[in-house]
Image (cartoon, rainbow, N blue to C red; front, side):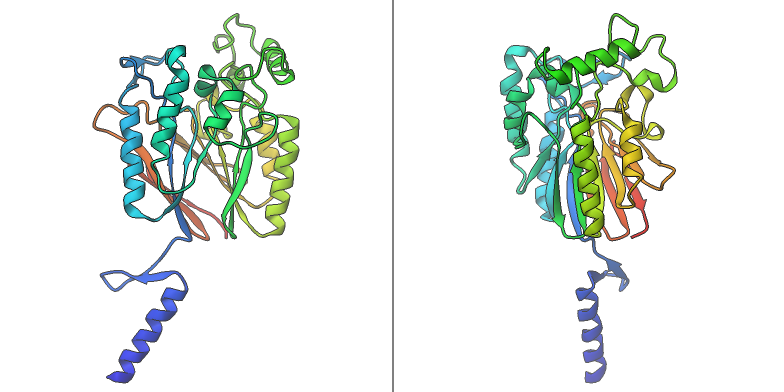
Length: 337
């Protein structure tokens, strides 16, 4: 009997060393390499509830309560090593004299998380504050107003945060080269006087709207270098962006202007496994022709009182599992390790 007990102990110790645990039912269950939390499109404002231009109800004051519940949940489990906010933390209807304090208020709620929080900018953020004011508040520490960066929480994985408003009519001074480039493109692609209107635009051309943007040349070169380095280090890459990259996972009106260029660059490498995004509030998912998973996250803003939309993500060697809360759908994304 002593010998059997010793063998059982050795087996258990071996399983523990390989990130495998024994469940209450006696079944071996693999443990994730790490876990993190995520939320998108909080779009808080201290204003009465309203509707989108499509008539979808929006709950401006309730959304910060969702964020508070999310942070409490993430802290309770003690397993999340960081949190990612997928942009649009305040709404465009927020009164401009309240913009600064409203951004600070929402950032303070994120800071209640017991760990690092990674932000990215969205169109609603830029309606409220210029980049020069916004980026320091979000602790995005880059040069020349850039809002793209990468980080590696464990040796096996690298996260790439894109700035999808790099080329944009929003956030830059009107005479800035990147704003001028954006307006030139919009004049060429969108004949409407209101550049936020997709009227008379067909198919994928409906993405050329002022509330979207593009990844610029310098950022593309940077991304190429990051993916090359990740390949050399045998890292799997998760790409994070406010604007979605794959037409199969989102409405045409929510796409990155040069999604095709970014996708073509990513597909030159085998390291990109998953792309996560916000912006398209109903959410969506797809697997592109190269086997990359795309998951667009459901918005916190459009959750009626008493409902939620945030997630916890468990990361393994061969899959990423999004465990959604309430309105955010759970999704398992399997890939070749």
